[in-house]
Each structure stands twice: as C-alpha cells, then as structure tokens.
Amino acid sequence: MQELSKSQKARRAIASFKTLVDALILTGSYHPSGTAGIKLENAMRQFNPEIYGTMGDDRIVELKGLEYVIDRLPRGIESSTKIVLTAREELESTSFEEILPLKRRRRSYLVSDKEMCFVVTRGTSEIYDIIAHLTFLNIEAQKISRQVKSPQGLAKEWQLLEQTVQIGDLLQGEELDASLWNLSIILGRTYKDTRKTFEYLEQNSKEGYNSGLLRIVQALGQRVIDETEGVEEVLHISFTPSLQEVLGHHQYAAAWAESLVARMIERGLQHRPIHIISANLHAIRNILYGRGALEKAGLGVPDDLYDMIHLIRDQEIDVGGYAAAHGFIEHPDSSGSSIDVQIIDTTGINASCYHPSLQLDLDLIGQQESVIVVIDYAFGTQAYEIMDELLSPTSVADTQIALQIESVSIIGKAGILPGSKGDIMLATAHVVEGTPHNYIVNNDLSPADFGSLLKVFSGPMLTVLGTSLQNRDVLERFHNSSWKAVGLEMEGAHYQRAISAAIIQEHIPKNLKVRYAYYASDNPLISGQTLASGPMGAEGVVPTYLIAKVILEKILAENGNG
Picture (tube, rainbow, N blue to C red):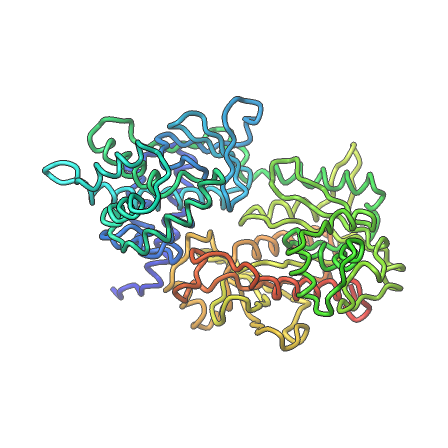
C-alpha cells in the first residue's frame, strides 16, 4: 500500500481532531489526561499547527504559542481543573466574575478559583478554537512537569519558582534576573526568550488580562504534578446539554438579525437598497466621515488618505460623534452573538464628510438612497448563521420583512501563501478544508481596481477550521498544487454558502454583487510572520483602507454599478 504523504497525514489528523471534538460535544465531557484527551493530543501532534511553533519538541516549552493562547483565553485558565462550555445561561446575573480575554470576543466566568465557564455563542468554530488552545496548554503543562520531576523529587528550580510565586512581590533588578534565569531552565529556553515572553505577558497582566508568566508556568506544572500524584481531581472539560441543543439552530443569529431589522424599521430604512459589508468597525466609518470629524475638531485634513487615518488615531478624534449627525447609526449587539453593527443612511453624506481621494457620485447617492450595513467580524461557521438569517425574510412584530439586498462585500484578514504581510488577496473561489465543499465566487473585484500601491493576488481561498488547525504541509499543497490557493481564512466559504442558499430560495437576486477582498495579516509558511508573531499594527492601515475605499467606490459611484 502506498505510504501517505506528509500533507495527507496532516489532513487526516486535522479531520480526526474535528471528529473527536464533535463526538466529545455529544458525549458531554472528557479528561485531557484520559483516552479522549490523549487522542486529541496525538492528532494535534500529527498535524503540528504552525501557530504553535515548537509544540512538538518535548525538550522546550513553546513561548510564542503560549503568548498567543493566553491572549485568547481568560485570566486564570491555567489554574482551572474544571472547565465548562455552555450556552448563554444568563450568568451575567450571578455573582461570578466575568472575564474577557485580551484578543477574543469570548465571554467567560470564574465560578471558583478552580472552575471556569465559557459561554459559547459563536458556533462550533469557537468550540474547536477553545479545545485546540486547551489541548496545547495541556501538552506544554506536561513538558513543564516532566522537566521538574525526577526520582529524587522536584527540581531545585521548581522549588525556587514556587517560592517566587508565593512571595508575590513585583520583582526587579537582580531578583528578577535570577528568577527568569531559573525559569528559563525549567522551560528549556534561553534567558532572552524567557524574558521577552515575561515582559510581553507582564504588560497585559497589569491590565488584568492574564496572571503573568511565572504564575502561569507554576500553575500549569503544578496541575499535572498534582494529577499524577492523585492530590487533586484531574482536569475535566464538559459540554452542557443547553450547548448541545443550540448548536446549529441559529438561536443567537436569529435574534441578532431580528434586532437589526427592527432597528432599520424604527428608522424607516427597511425598503431602501441595502449593501452589506463585513469589516472591522473603524474602516468604513473613518473613510466616510474622517474628513468632517477632523475639520470639526479644527484640524487640517492631510492630502494623503492614509495620513488622515493615522492622524485620526493619533489625535483620538471622535469620528462616531460627527458621523451620527450625517446618517450614521451605531447598533450594539444584544443577542449574545458579539457582532455589533453600523447602519449608514447614505443620504446623510455630503462632500464635506469624506476625504477628497474617495471618488463618490453624490447625485447617484441622492437618487438611490442606499443604506450600508457594516457588520463586525463573524467567527468561522458563525458567518453562515448570521448571513443566512440576514438574507432571509425576518419576522418582526408578526410581519415578514425582506430586505432589498443589492450587494455583499467582505473585507477580511487572512493568511497569505504567495506573498507577505500587508498584501491583498481576492477570492475566485472558497475551498473548505477537509470537506468536498467548494464554492465558485463571481468576484466583482479585480487586481486592476487596486492600482499599483500594493501587491494583489487573485485565486482560491482556503477556508480552514480554525487559526490553530493549520499545517505547513497542507498549506503548501493547496498553494503549489493545481488548487493554486493564495490564502487561508475562516469565514469566506460560510458566507458564500449562505449567499448561494439565499439565491436558491429566491431571497436575493442571482445577479447580486459579491466582493471578497482580504489583507494579509500573516504568512503561516514564513517563520516570524505567523499570527503568533504579533499583530500588524500600523502596517494594516494601508491595505485595510485601500480595500474599504475600493468597495465604497463600487457601491456609491456610477462606474461601480452598485
């Protein structure tokens, strides 16, 4: 029998991880140290996620991967021995402390010093993400435990770490250097690497987002030591029946869509032409209203659009306050979906609102009276649920309301395969990793729309299960084979599935304008350019706003044809 290639083995391992998690959701619980947990570990080690760096090397603890995970899990997760994933249980009315991670819209509650509860409102993608992170933490915790345990007992370095954590005082100077040197021995890392991660986490720890590197390492290692010695109950992860019942039923998405449509009815906008844009909540607002906000604040408007954006950020200009007087409506989420919305009545826009480089047709805007609905980023499969609900007729006060959708535009961030951070990708198709589901995209965007300011790559986009469920060999195969994929992201295929379904059901016209443009937030094939290497920062301004500018001109100018 022919031996499987590396990419085939990795794809099989990713599929196994997904299948195992799906089965565990139905089963209701598992122990990471038990049979199911070991199978998850083995699958993850097999596909060796690029974002987790040296996870597969048992000699050293992976620090960049640890930074990435800690930023996306709640403070205190390292000490928890009981973790519960549940549906929205109205836990906000309890005395439990609500904890929000630094870099993920994820609601969590600290039930006790040993029990953490995740409220899952964003579908199975969120569950895959959480379980992948917890599996990674367990792998690293075992490394720490093995490093400090021996037949003679616990290593001296571990005893010193325990003393340091118990003292709890802020270390400085020689004491800090000595503690970090001691910690680097436990981690199998250099002093320099250990200090960089310590300083990174320490900054966020002061803001209440994590417990700091010393405490995190001590708690992770101690939990595994206690488990092996039978001192404490082993780590237990469970999924409540209420979570099992709501998965796939659009409960939160339906409430989200109903609330949005009700708000549009309240403003008398429900029968206007609607243009949907999925994007962050600053790009469209700032590009449409930034000039007016700056002039209102008594500041000059730079000739360069991107200089204007930097000035708005540096001066912390209240663009939203100005925009509210020109057709801009904030619609915060109340459904639990964690997707806020902006509604823009374009009839409120005039030439003094937007930057002169934005070529809009004010006469056309006055004739069409379009409404732009900007929705914040969805997460993985959640994209299908919210788009499916938004494109379908919505029942409000016993009345069916069908919005007149003219276009759907997606401004996403994605990993790029042929280029570098800051480049742009245009989707010609979406290919769902690990499934036979592929979607052709008749993209109303082309490289010619973007000029020569940035590199633009056009081709199929790979829709992956999660940021942590990626593998270099699989990505290289999709890029170098006849697939010729140019990037990877998490939502595109799910949006397109909803659009296709709405066309089949005749909720939207077949000639609906669809636009998919992504800017490269990382390149998972290049060391130092993965998501774990950190955010783009100012580098992301030009690609984000260039895409926003092109899409707005497509919608609000004659040559864009809506």
